[in-house]
Image 1 (tube, rainbow, N blue to C red):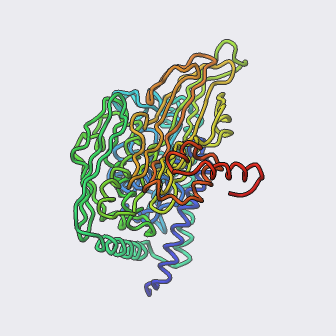
Image 2 (cartoon, rainbow, N blue to C red; image 1 turned 180 degrees about the vertical axis):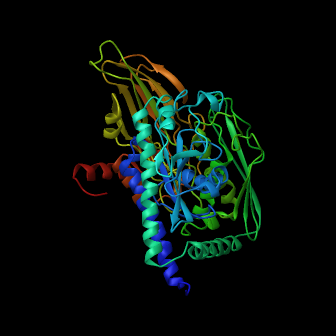
Image 3 (spheres, rainbow, N blue to C red; image 1 turned 90 degrees about the vertical axis):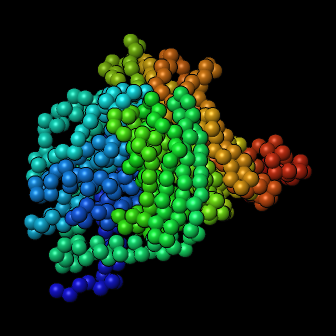
Length: 566
């Protein structure tokens, strides 16, 4: 049989990307957890028979998919290729062989064609609860953080393990949601498998060997060409963030060689006693993502395009936490990895990378308990909400408001959050003045005010950072505004950890702004006027930071009163 042409292989490559995107969208449509349905905290991918990632879905987070790129090899090793059969489905939430913490369930399905194993489909979803202390930083070891599921069979030749489901149901606070998510994960892999077999039959392929080599050869060559065009040099970068009870510092040395880029985290802070530690697989995922965004953004993610990016960190630094370190909030450290890498890369490639942004997601989880005054039949509930601060300004473009970088996870709508449990979001709006000043302005953070419905009390598990270490400006840009959190009676609260809130009390939060890029004096006057008209900056900032005249400010006010565009 003649081999397909390069044109045919390119069509197949595009088809694989569309297949895994359909796989991801099926998960979005069928998942029970709001973090998946509304925020897109998921990933999906297809792999060859050796467990190498061929394509990933556009929908999803780099932390999931880049970490999941390594996980299928663990499944092959643990399950044993010779024991695999059609109808099998495997799962794990192992932080070190999955995607970094117990709250992520990774599901892997072998794909058979005419009795031969031709590849795998894998997907990951963040679940609202996995038992233990709940989603938060309070644990002292991974054993406290929830139910551990080693790499094992979810289904054996099509038969779901009911004993496993009973164990899961007996150890989590939201059993229906979690079991529903398990079935959604298995189903989306099955959809990917069906589409793959359709493609194999359409192109009359014996297996995926030919298309895999085409994808890997082209991706590897294109990535190496980009790296070869860069200066051969080393630069260092670092950043300090809040940590839990004490600040942590991440340090990196970035070395560009002819055929690889080495990212070395030697000198980074050691483990934290609480659950903000990050397994290397997750730190590696975001280090690779940061470099690909800056150097080769249009080359699709797969095993070969990620291969030249090598990451090293000494064991039991906070970016290479070993078992049994607590890792529930590993995303907080992991989401700061790109800005640390960019602090170094900016010294090698000026005017390429953005200023620092909010970095980690501004998440919190509400644990609600009914009081005696609650409606009849009221139950406990867990409500997790994903939110974002501002993104850092880019060399030629303002930072995005209330947008998550690097995670790409979406901010959850108020309606979806309030539907998930007896909570009320009293306020959710952009935070004027929170973006750092500069030639390009940093993105705005947002305000949120949250409370329980009448008849409930609640604890809040805060997962915030940038309280004491706001985003730093680049090339003369100003810092973003820091995070604040307090009760509505003015009592300050901690940026991380589970905290009780008295009945009838609300929690007020202001999420951080992204930093500015370039000198404020270089900002286009028309852009300043638009910011002023939209309320993104104050009159005082326009006067003091951008040297706008009082007469120009009055002109903006007159235009607003007249209903004119600015």
